[in-house]
Image 1: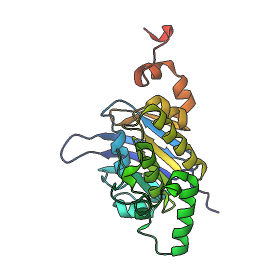
Image 2: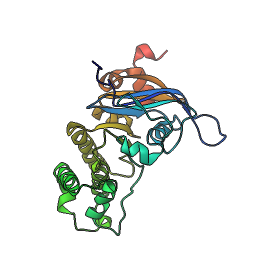
Image 3: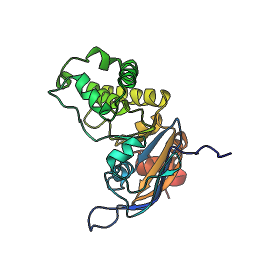
Image 4: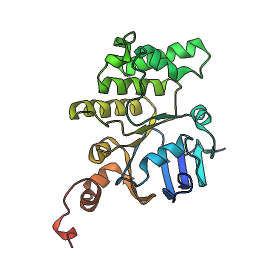
Length: 250
């Protein structure tokens, strides 16, 4: 009897870059287990957003493998990756401001043909993100930044993805709105969708995540339970804006 895949998504020994430039990712390995939020943190230029582009098919790796549910999908394009269960929410705001909330969300269902399934997914995202249902017929451009982000999350969930790839979801948002966005990320995970998260607010992201991966120079420098990474004074000093303890100062 075949055992179930341990991870929903595996990026293994990935090397990737842009054009003829030097490699951005240098032998990177990241794993996303079911029911988890995995957070990538690290300094600017570490390759965090590039990881998501590789995972979603926007950038083909030069070497290494990508597997979803233990199926090798290395080198496939964005549409194929979406069919395999990887939905990418891009950095910044990506709603169409002159379209209604409902029209924006329905763009995420363009690959679905069964109207019963579509209606089930509409009800699911409206229940998960109540603002989506409340503002369904309003122009998306009239929503606040945090509300627009929830529309983006809802759109990504229309195809029942296995993993949602989130790139800097708090970018440009005030602290109160940022807190709301992280609450919605937890709701996505609790509703059954794993999340691979890249976030500039490393401390807050690790407070939300189950697993943290610290990237540096295109590799995973260290990974483990997010709570343990938060408690590590050396990591806090290097990557989270914390202060090293006296014993670590030397």
